[in-house]
Image (cartoon, rainbow, N blue to C red; front, side, top):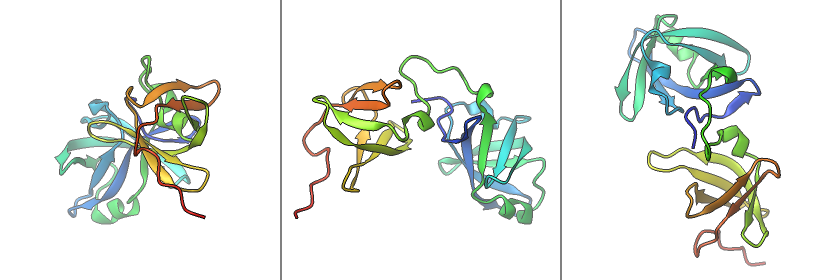
Length: 184
């Protein structure tokens, strides 16, 4: 989908990771990466901590290594478990200008969220509420007009067109894709 595929926390920043929890007593944290760019968490990389929308602080990576499907990261500015606990569930962001250039057929998550989802015949099926970033493929999380959620694999077999100008994503309907309608 994208290289730095996190949500946009503001028009000028992209989320590239989320601090899940502290690890150990020396300030290391478990990070859920939201980027395809491994260099974002390399030694000496600088990244911004978005402290719950209140302020941003620059952090410098001392070390980073894979850890149970996530990353174990140590930042120079976070020295203790207490410091790490203070930043639990905070986002790690980059300025939009530092993001890689998108190739044809790539989209930012924040561009897709809020787009209408329509069938090939133009029937409105719902709106993209979120994007689930999977290891093998991504999925659009769609909420229909009745409030039911369904997922659409973000692959060519299902997604026919993404139109930024009209704000619509056209999908191919296959049996079992849509939720069963509630009986009234």
